[in-house]
Image (cartoon, rainbow, N blue to C red; front, side, top):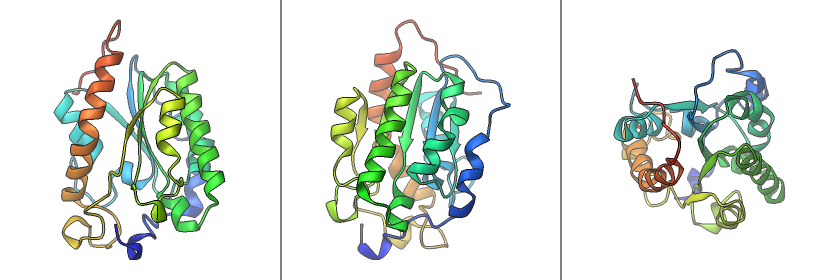
Length: 213
């Protein structure tokens, strides 16, 4: 991941807070799996069905609700956490955030506090968490290397460096030069899938996940 690529996902920061009430009126489903985060999660830059959330849903044969919102920081995501995630009583939540914190230069301590709160609140609802890290490069990590410790402390699963080794290569980026394209999202799905499968298996006792339609 090159330093020139650090201003990642520059999309609608000013509107992120408006998402705090999104999806409140849609009915929840028992044992739902939710992907929660910013435009990396929502799939900006991909064609329909080729974002990593859709790919994982197809591969695992379960429905994964996409609760990604372009422009989210850890702060704005925390503010919409209840409406988008907690109120739906999920069984498992994939959490991928931090790119916009890096872009705006948010203090690392604030980003760590926010992501810790998000994971703790999800775990307090009884849901499993798959926490996804952007990079293992300490100079570009919005959380200063804190994510593995947060995962351990909250008994969550962790996927390190989902963007490492390919982000910044035009072959994996959309026309905007910032968001991953279909090929980039395939790599993301490849890296998240084994951890997600293991976590799903550990959550399976007594639960029937919603199958993909």
